[in-house]
Image (cartoon, rainbow, N blue to C red; front, top):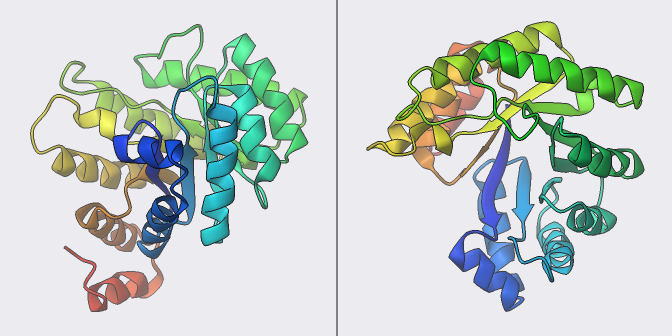
Length: 264
C-alpha cells in the first residue's frame, strides 16, 4: 500500500507559519520525519491564501524535494497553484485533485497531460457527494470514460470514494468499503485512495476508529492512504493488516517492524 504523508498542509497553524516565514528547516524536518516513518509520497498543500498560494506551493515543492527523494501529491483547489507546483516538481507527481464537475475537470485535465501526472479523482459531481456505493461507482465510471477519451490510462487514476462521518451517517463506513470493492472489481487497473479522518469526526477515540477502518479498507482493496505516518499505532495496524492479507510475503516486513520497535 502506498502511504502518502499528510502533515505538510497549510491549514495546520505551524505549517502555515513556516510557509509565511519561509522556514525551510521546519518544512525539511517535517518531510524527513514522514519519509523516515515509511511514507513513500508526501502531500504538499500551501493553504488557501489566493494571492500567494501559487508561489507558496512552488516554494514548498522545491524545499521538500530538496530534502527527500520521493514524489509529491500537489494538493490545491486552484489550478494555477497546481501548475506552479508541478512546474518545479522532479519526476511524476500526483495531482490532488479532480472531480466530475465540468469546470474542475476542464481546468485540471490539461495539467495531467502536460506534466504526465497521476491524479486523485474524487467521486463527486454537481457539488454533491453520493451517499451510496453505487452512486460513487457511477461517478467513477463517468470519469473513466472521460479520461479514456482524453488518453489518460487507468493506472494513473486514484479514485477517492470520499469518506463521510459515521457519527451522523451510520451507513457511510460500509458504503465506502463497498465503493472501494466495486471500483477495484470494475476497473482493476485503476487505484483507490482516501483520507481517513472524516470517518471518526465527532466521536471519541478517533485514532482507534481510524486505524480499524483502514484495516477494513485494505481488506476491500484500498491501494493508498493519506495519513500521518508518524502515528505509530496507525502504522502498526498497516503492518499487521498487510501481513494478514498476504500482502507481505512471509510477513517479513511485519517481523522487521517488530525488530525496529514499530509495532505499538
